[in-house]
Length: 156
Length: 155
Picture (cartoon, one colour):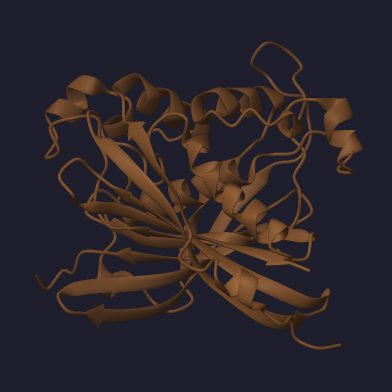
């Protein structure tokens, strides 16, 4: 066995972007999400309470970027591109890492851009494996980056 | 509201206050609607069977949201969640419903965490934790870590 060799046609995709994806963060969507995940903090559900808080409005639980959150799945378009360029078709979700950089609340508009940040060749128990990091950056209407999500995928 | 924790009270090895969760089929449908993730893997038996997981499974992102809950509840109103990462290591099957809103007997999940590091960076007091979701057999089906900012009694 050996480490996966990252070919030039794969390397060329580093820096490939998808998006921009626009998210409107709405009050009702925040309330429904908080209820669905069992978050009982009134800052995410009680409009009056939130209005009287230091934020002055309903805030989103960390990780909620507006409905549908699933729009962020555009990262899978990058994975498809990699497979078209010769990446192994075996796919494992290697997990996700979030940097919560600024609060998100009702009325915000977020713009997300998906970026293929890095490709690395490794040897794992599955054999030669390509490890890809896809970074999604969410910026609000004031130009502030509020969230960076880094997803790792393993192709083997 | 939960009691506020302070940097000085946290020790390496301290336990994050555990959070109990019971995943149900109803909850998964509710999460699908609220998140917009309508993958039938999370609500349709045959679809899940064909994908080789047997039955509909709990959304990975829902388990991530539980871990966010765990940390936010623990750090209190003055704390701030800075980073959270997780990996999905095993699938979880929700309980089915007995009545409109009451699940059948079955698995109960616990979100847990342990402090692994505490340090000061700039003017922030940071605490790093190992976090996980554990199923009824005490298997860690989702594992990860979190970095939080907590207030200091000295400021």
